[in-house]
Amino acid sequence: MAVLRFPDDNTRIESEPEIRAALAGMGIEYERWTLDRVPPDCSADEVLAAYAEEIAEMKRRGGYVTADVIDVNSSTPNLETMLARFDKEHTHDEDEVRFILAGRGIFFLALDGRVASVEVGPGDMLRVPRGTKHWFTLCEDRRIRAIRWFQETAGWTPHYTDSGVDKGYHPLCFGPAYLGRRVDTKIDLKA
Ligand SMILES: [Fe+2]
Image 1 (cartoon, helix red, strand yellow):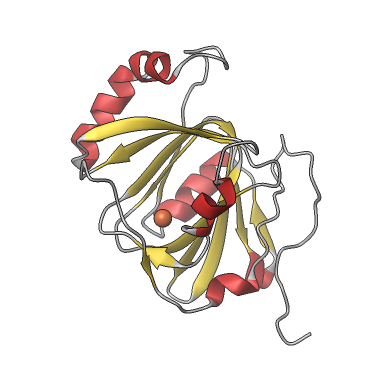
Image 2: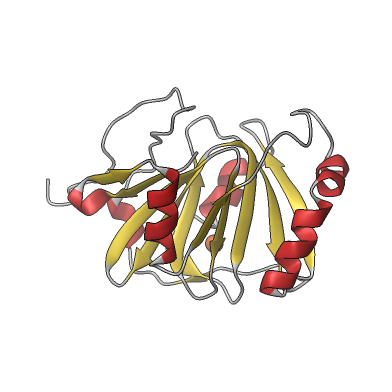
């Protein structure tokens, strides 16, 4: 279950219909999908086979041509280098579409000058349209497994805005399954 927050005014939404409605108003699609198709330790190919229908439907909806499974944890080589590519505000020329199978992470979305954070966890599907300013990182346990969809087989490249807005927000996780620190995430840069 996701947690939607607006750190600037300390607003937090944890109800699925309210999260879906609020994100839809910002052009972001959010859904809850069932997780009972596959055991947690199954292979990527088994995931892709088990969710073949949803993967095909999402391809039709968004014009995506391929899907894969990303699976990282704290012992993944070069994990911090990989995360550093995406933890600064950027856009892509294609949508960022994720269905989370395991682990937790935070999407920060900069929309009309207001920052929203969406902490995603198992069962959450998020579709961020191309051109949306955002950044992403993992929760402190550094774990995520997700299905991704792509419009270009070559993948996608981040276009950095260099706004520095990302420096004002700590990616600390609040979700129901998360056992790490629970503190507010707005940093006062003037302090
Ligand atoms: Fe991105």
